[in-house]
Length: 77
Image 1 (tube, rainbow, N blue to C red):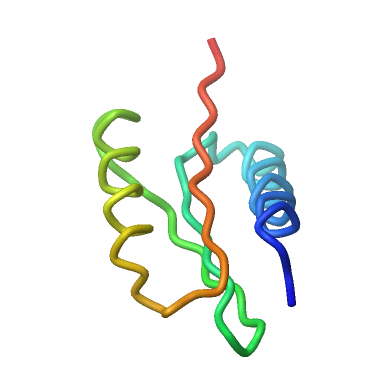
Image 2 (image 1 turned 180 degrees about the horizontal axis):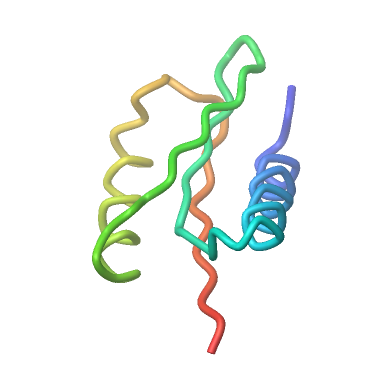
């Protein structure tokens, strides 16, 4: 079973890949399902605060009956 910290590492690696492809950093959530699948969703909203709010609600809803879930938000100034 994958742990939440390993899932966070996966999503951080994805974020680095996005930056290298010049997509920028978009808030994301990720889930690990009971059968080990990873589900990743980009939270594309007008501002980071709205994205975080929707990400938190999505984590609480737990649409995949996930074993683990993480919300990733990074702002670079």
